[in-house]
Image (spheres, rainbow, N blue to C red):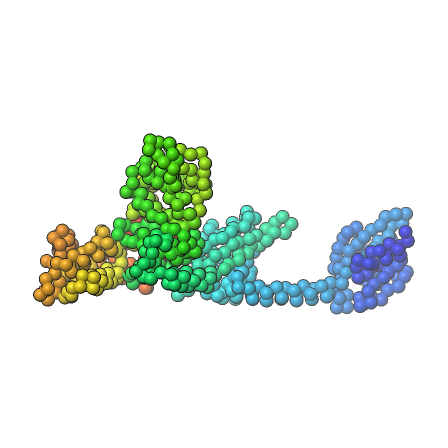
Length: 570
């Protein structure tokens, strides 16, 4: 083939071709008209580019700026009887402009998305942060672009998910947490993180976030409207799904309780297995029923069982079911895991379950398959599991009363209900609430509480929590004479009178409140700082820190989670 024929073939793929001999003389050329090169056959290539000492290598690529044009030149060396060098020209000018326009358009598209987009480079520096992400997290992109993720979100770089994805090259799916707060309120988002790879190397990482608040609001409204349309308050309806409570029935006004209700509502939307921790009388089943009725499975069964109330052998058959002949007297019986169908199974006082049965329960939760006692057949577990315990899970694990692997199975998400003694605002609220409730219920009008009795009730530790307080108020209304001018300490039941008088004589209400509740005194100003300082002083021993703060270990864990505090690593 001739030089011209070979050059013509190459020209069909590029914007220009120049054929040279070994002496750098032009043998043939065909160049697009808008490329400003004035050459002719026989000229040397040095007439329009400096290459006197250049040794052209096959497949070499270099750039040339020529009269406002940016050209990419690829060298093709054809070795036959005579060596022919083809310079293949590509005009990058329009391509560069197009790339800039394309990049601008892509940035505008990203900013118009409802999903939040955040990208970081291999050093963990934020390189992209769109408007949707700004709205979700309350941050401004121009203030954080170029900064490290951990400095923006105030966490240890060791725990950076983007850094982990850069290292592993593997995506992280469906996380749900708050990285930032607005006016002290954590802003929870559902997000996934993905690597961007080039030539087998991860060069960047980005996260896609969705703010589910609008979707949740619509879902909450739909669920509530459906419930209001079908159910009156009096029939709230055992016959429908096995519940009688919703979040409207959870009373109180403390900030801790209000935050807990919001957290429980968010958790219920996701159908996640949940562990509720709280002392006796704090309302664990009330929360469990409310979460069921707030969830997408509200029209499905809610099935509850108290694990402490049933012997071990009966508990196993009750949960898993039996087949006829499995043991003496056994009949074909469906278990509660199957009976709950697509609804919720509530395992109350799960800490009372024997260790041997915990092992079997753990396997069911892990495999999501249940086998009836005496059968080899399995059935799928479709229900969501809400468990409750009235003791600190870590204490139970340390005492070998709960398997640690069972804890991780039942506590995909955990909720801690603080005891009433840590919610003085709610003690005052419930005193008035139950006084009003039982006066109407018993059709009896009573005078107000004396100052002495009111202070004593506010100072009392309420080991039985709300249930104990309700029982005491009901007794007071029954016992107080109609001619009394105030409800006094001597109107209390004798067993309560002794306990309250002992507490009252030990310390004044003001002293007790000052000693036991330092968190409440500084709640709005420096709660986080106090907790963090105490944890550092205790070398992050949660039990010791809780003792110094005068609160329970579970309550401190709640505040640690609330303020996104993390133990520093060395």
